[in-house]
Image: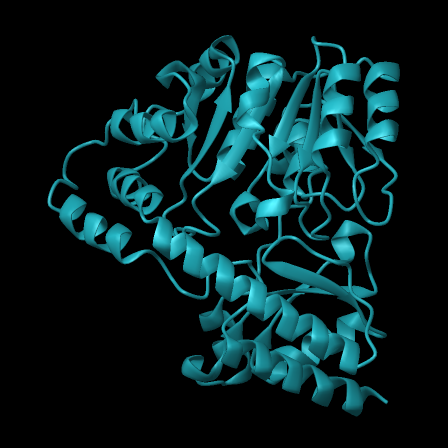
Length: 369
């Protein structure tokens, strides 16, 4: 018997999400010393985690035999104070990916439609397809979201959800406040807007605006954020949504009771208070972005200007260059599955990691000629 046939057709059609290659896997594959490998594939924080968060984790381990607080009171309280919202506006997730899937499970069903952009985060179509709904992907504008095209598609197809990443992954493109507000005002209020701000902490001050404050005027808005990037807690998987209390209530109805473990909750509370660590993370990313993009220019390579902690660049024979970089012990991310076959994406690392990447890239390009 073919047991795959027991699953619905829309599940069988899913191409699983491909994460960045782990260091141990690459070490086994090419016989490399793990200590010499540089991983710049998954937009992780090169500074690691906040010392406060690490200390909180050690303390939380003492109670690991007990189930975590299923309501996440301490973390939700810290978030509600930070963003001046009620506890009922906050939903916790096992990473922000979990939040995206909760939205799909709560508000999409077979026959429903969701809109997202070409070159946007791969989880949007995956989460949509996993519940049997139909994804509508609109053409990008300069590798970023074309909000006018998304607005037209959402209205034409009577969509229930629109997914917007800001900044976008993997392109790093960004939507400013004027354009975002115009979109929200024009969109019917019975269509939910998911504003995925996983990289919000990397924005320079002049690009930031109070998206959480928009909830007062746009109750159809859901803001999704994560502790995996700037806060350095990717291995713990903790994210959150801020939404209208009725929307949050629906998300909590499909949320697993203990979806965020106790160690993750404690670490996130501590990380949220460590503003100095986030500041250092931001500054390192700013200097690293300049180092990497300047290096790409010297190699004659075009890149997409990015406001995240990564940059996508165009290179001939991207697939071959990616494989050669692996052999040289440098892990970046191919983005052919984002309809960008000539691009690779590299995360911003430490000064030494960035230099290692640029040196290996120059070598790989030279060998390909």
